[in-house]
Image (cartoon, rainbow, N blue to C red; front, side, top):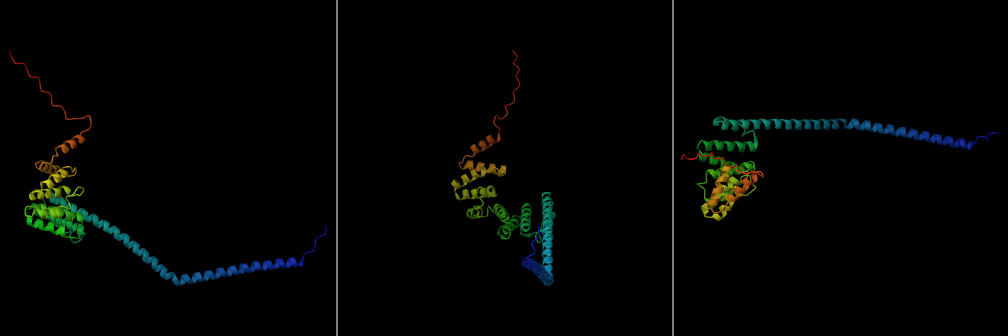
Length: 270
């Protein structure tokens, strides 16, 4: 069988397509070269600012990490120092404990300053210097930079020291916001407010307040015993509450131990 002769027109078409493909490849290579040149130029122009920004960011991060670590170590050191001061005071070394705590006032921040002032006031009270102690407690209570819990404690201690010199209205005004169930200082503040009510003749307010304090399980037993007696004197019965609490503390099926058996008495001689 004879082959058909090649069509010149088909050959020209293929050549044209080949040229087009080569042209596309060439144009792509040119575009890539142009982009690379632009990237190189941009890198040359902005490399130093970008590098400086990266270095600055790393420096800031390193500084923050160092500060955070340093702050934590300083805080631990302050806590250990204040704990040592408390231990010295409890051991009767009042002057040494006071000096140890006073060194924290300048560098320990508002919290340690207030805690140190409270410690100093407590030492003054133990030494019988009630006026100086009361003035220190009053200073902490009025210090708006001190933590609120320290200010409340200072307020309670101030009123306790100055209770006889204060009018009942003043006691109530200072401590009534703290004499509410749920407040950390409710038992101590409530007792003082209740006694102030009694001085005013408001036994109807004092009795229920004493009864509420007697129900506070977190209050010291000595304080609960006092307010329970005061409530009883005012006609508010808290004995039932005490019996209920004792019954709840006793496991079911258990009760008070039976009285010991008495030894048999010998029969009288005839």
